[in-house]
Length: 326
Image 1: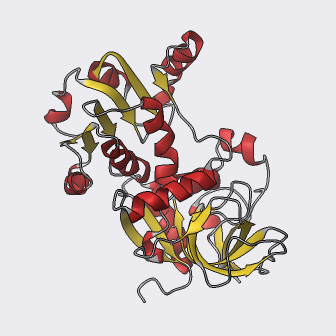
Image 2: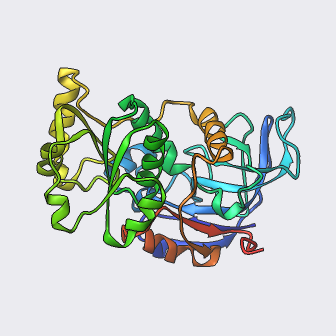
């Protein structure tokens, strides 16, 4: 089978399209013929292999050579004892971390993992959408939002931010989306109550009006979020921020148990339940994917380069099977 292989950590230039052996599903596993995958922020972080990733994933050669978290495709084969899916079933989900990923013709995973039947109205090219809401949902749950709560989402056009915007609206919050000017219409289409261009005076003129300030891209400076929060409000982020500025507020919040500066993460083994919940939201018309662009598998290095610019809106999809336009 064809796969995007990384033999060492580094830039997108280390990625090679190679022929590798097809995986065989073990007991309780299914094999998926991948039609679509993604390149996302998680993949880029693992490819670059910074210190934290190095500590988690291995110090020398990569522990896995095929990346790719999100997938959509069809069940191709099932292992002994697997009963939840049949060959031909259309599915979507997330590859478990540490296993070979979705940037390949086939992948194998446990049928009890984060995989679900594909919503009937969702094509493969739009079904590779799990990463954003998977990382956004723990934050939105932590905030315990109720109708009337005011939330500012910084970076509301990215995969995680656009997901958080939608999930906050689903809970009845009043959402201000802060985005680049070119993404204003996207944020409005996702239900934002107000949209602000971060590069304009309008952003600097926002006041201390928010119950929650959520930095979904890890780029908001401390002086900005402090002036936006109401007394007793919550600041949440996905990163340590410019120059590690968020480290001390996060550490102090942990020491004092105040919960006022947080990085909520998905609970262990929560993927299966989450993918099923996401399917329910999609079928009810309560969640929509945001697809920036699609690359063929042969051009996946270019997809990585584009994601690394930080300019994407939503999801960058990979056409693995070459049939997403069919």
